[in-house]
Image (cartoon, rainbow, N blue to C red; front, side):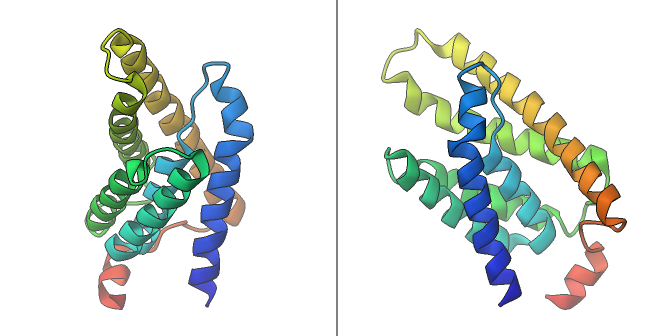
Length: 170
């Protein structure tokens, strides 16, 4: 029951952050992609099956929350959760470089996937959206890596299990 409770708590926190604090930052040009960050962290911690499930549920809830096309976020976050979960068994998950690279790749993929939906058929805004995607990628990866380092320091132990223990448990 505990993993399921943390599953729903993480989804609720991510959606609340996205629709409150982070949306006010986005109006000022500071874009932090909470959906991709939380999906990457969840998949790193719990593996591919849970990562894909988390990404799908979070994406579906985000689609319902924002009242736009269903599946817009759900598809990419599902694939992101699965890919990061598959990689999590072979990577040093507590490495800040690994976390930065995975968050950056995840956010870039999510931003590049979501951007064409905002163009509305024209290509006039492409340079702006590409610049915004790059800015969101760099900001989210930097802030996310810093947040994970602070959490690791506060808890005094690694946030992610060792890859060999994960393989034995599954």
